[in-house]
Amino acid sequence: MLFRSVVEEDVGELDQFDLQSYMSSAMANQSSRAIKPSDKQKREQQAEAFISEGDELFALSEKYQADFVVRGNQALYELLGSVYSLGLRIEQSDNSNEIIRLVQKKIKADHGIKIGSSASAMSTMVQYVIRSDKRTSSRYAKVLEVAMAEDLSPEELPDYISRRGGINQIQQIEAEAIAKKQGSKESAERLALLRE
Image (cartoon, rainbow, N blue to C red; front, side):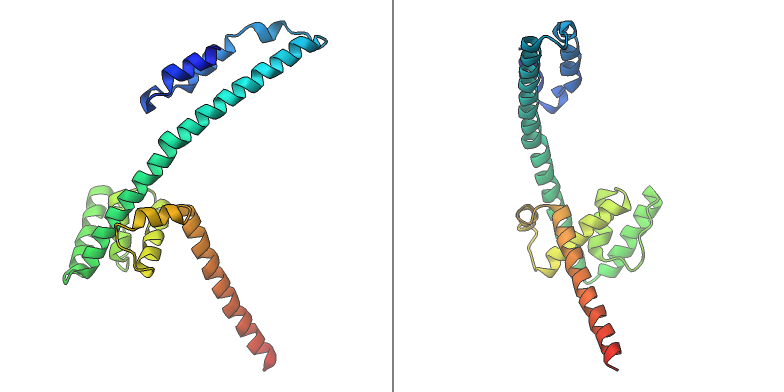
């Protein structure tokens, strides 16, 4: 098949991951244009060809997932482990407040990123290293705060994040726990008011 040769040639490395090549060659196939709606055998063959092509795209998707997404996530978790280590060492330093202040001053001067003066060393270092949008930095910092609360070492962090289902899963579970706790507190307050 035409697609198989494109996949075998182009999927080897990220630089060669070229779905556009596949689409161009698949669209050039003229056999589907000559089929009439009343030609059942040709329609079934065409359906089988599309299903086969879909199966090959699924295989390509699995390869992409394994080669790039999983490895990319693992690399991110290892980077966060290094940021976590740096943040812990700064927090344990006798001069932590001055270090945090100077890092915040530098990131504002060099990159225009303002970090609140009450930000922790962990949050400050996530924003300094990641330099992404605030939402992403905040998500990463929250995961590192959970790791601190669970007394994890930096070496344990990548496996911990993977085991818990990733950054989004950790954040979601923690947010639900906080909401449940807050909801229970509010329910107790309302019940106390009703009893008065």
